[in-house]
Image 1 (cartoon, one colour):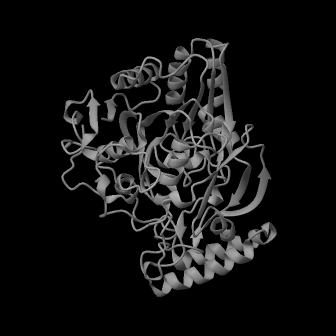
Image 2 (tube, helix red, strand yellow):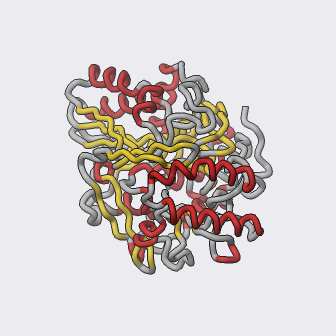
Length: 456
């Protein structure tokens, strides 16, 4: 029976001692085995570092609601280090969105001083920080104009062939899957018929203990981003990840919700632009003013539904479940795991994000930490705490309908919540006092729990 700890505390990151205590209390409530972390283990901490700031407000003051806060990361690092007893390694790593600046992220979050403090207090433990990306893009107004090669994961990559075990089997999007860039051919070459494969960074795949540190936020393509969706950040090539299917629902796509004349025109125009811009960085700069004109006619992405940013997205949830299958069942060599992965998720909900997540949400001070040893249970409780009906989200509903490589060995009713807030202890069905998060505008009216009330 999976237990999820949901503890309420301060909503001010400056109270580092109180947040550290809150995390310890939350983890203690889970009653993890005393040997969950062994001396000598390779432990990976995977924060959500999607972007160095809210994409609407570049600068050093608008990021606490977007990424996992360093106060949470440092508290968990110290919790792990105590259990390693002087032997082993802790790797804090992520592959942020390709057009993000890791150097700026480190500066804003104070990651170098964080490492120095932890290394000074635990000198015999190897504590590392890794940017797992193979390249970083520089974008102007959402258009990629230059690409810089990076070293990527020093341990290399892991290619996992899910093939017939993929959640994309039987899906009608063959040939029209859109990944992370204009190169749709690359995405569809990896997902065609019964061929479905992913390229993952080897360091997290080789971990003895994987600790997922997601941010509690709404998400434009899957409803909420928490433990399950955070695995996008262990990929070595994000263009192998299908995010939506080109076209409208009547065409078997989920790019737009309706087959309007404007949607058809935008689809044709953007399709032509993507083919022209593929592998042509010099032309990309010429596209910037054209895109601005197009925005005036087609509307801004912050207000108009496109690119699968709505509750009808039938593509992205499949990819997310596939990624979790890869971590759950495969090791760093790409073979089946010989022993189960020790997995833990600790969710940063101190200041969460609502509305246009994951990169432009509005801050929502909640002061909560969620923790559990199964990502589906964590995400279902997280969605419920946010005031959403998890059964109305394809990602969560279909987690209990997996055909092949099923990593969910329990039913929703078996999930038990442990909390220092009495109204939250029990089952999800019994939770009648929750936060009322505002969904992404493409999800408004589709996922809210009507009976929820704002928690105090």
